[in-house]
Length: 74
Image (tube, rainbow, N blue to C red; front, side, top):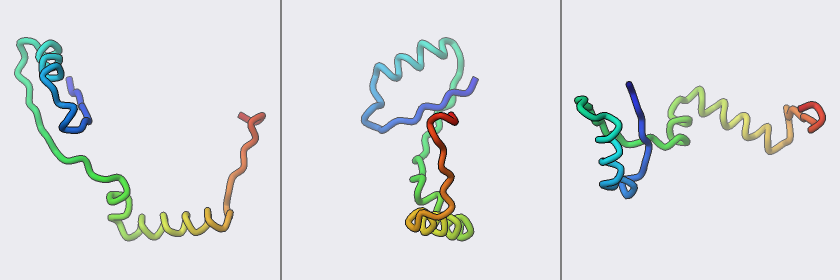
C-alpha cells in the first residue's frame, strides 16, 4: 500500500501521527519527506516548455486560437 500525504509542516500534529499508527497497525512503514516543487518553477524549467507556455500566453492575450464552447453543447 502506498499513501501520499501533501501538507504544510504546521498541519503535522499528534492526531495525524496517531491516524497513521491506526492505519498501519503492526506494519513497518517508511516515511520520506521532500519539499514540493513550485508548479510554475517546474513548468518553466524546460526551455521548450517555457517557450510553448509564453507563446500560449501571448495568444491568449490577443484572443487567438480560442475554442468557444456553448453551455448547450455540454
